[in-house]
Length: 493
Image (cartoon, rainbow, N blue to C red):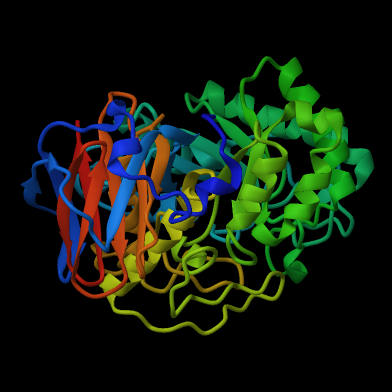
């Protein structure tokens, strides 16, 4: 985690610096490379620019200050559910190899953060845990053999293609016998089973590591504040349960096993920031929790800044949901903001039907807004589903980041978040630092980075009409043409 300037991060126009006040370290030298998505073009190289000496004022200007730094970037990606692994496994070997390379190669989409499920989620071919049946307190029946069919092989392939791939694991439900109601459908865990459930999760981490898939982080429960009315694998985790489980059971069990797996709290919506605030007051939880896993379905991304301001050593991670869900919230307002999913009900509010490029712009706006609120990674839900949003054993009707036609076995769609992920991954590699970019311009969102190799980059999302903007970088400037409804990457050394 880099330097913290609290609320100043959000006020893009509040501290607009002049070129004369930015230290010489900010001065970029060399050609600016540009990739754009606009109209029917996607991440297409266009003519580059050279820096020029600053001359005069500009109405639309963005000023960079790399001496003011914020969070390090972990990466951008999508969830590798059992549903996604199953669909990828239905492809012919050559097509499967090409598609996995497209998804995970740093030269292509470059997914470098993914989320897998511990047992079944609602996006699976069937409901299962790794120890289902009669009570088994010694976990003698525990086995991950089901995952050896296609989940583990595809994860091994993904990490071979991208050795830096960071993997998060999240459970949707403990085994049914550990819960009230004896079912994975809804309900909650019985507190006397906290200790054995901690061992269950440790055995999962160890079994995956033995199979060659080291897992980097774990959450205690997907969507901890709802049991989804018993319609899918789910479990409600009251705050006091999470405090006791993490501080007294899971944290010590992972530590005793010698695992380096990080623990992320909550794994639910922005509006639950008050719960997070109080959970981190417990010293044992504070000791073991690396950060907070957030979902965007209810609430605003500013919740991440609230927690950062109170607990600046605890990182923010977006672990599920379309990036467009954060668009239009906060200091820059945009129209046609998609409505949130209603937690625990299973319906999605009606939202405007957007053309493909407008949908990409909404994803760009949402991602930028989240990045300006301290998020370190963003993970879309389901890297691939079929044309009907399946395999799916739950009540939610969603699309994947990509689509495989169940009949033709062709990749038929690369959705809005696909292109947002591509723009972001090519701008900010692992370890890049978000830096200050100032300039309040109507219907234009911007975020800037310095990568570990010294390369600088910006992502500009233009939700308005054709325009030019001036980028001020120390004593130099460049004037960039932005098509209407577009995403633009700038990069230079």
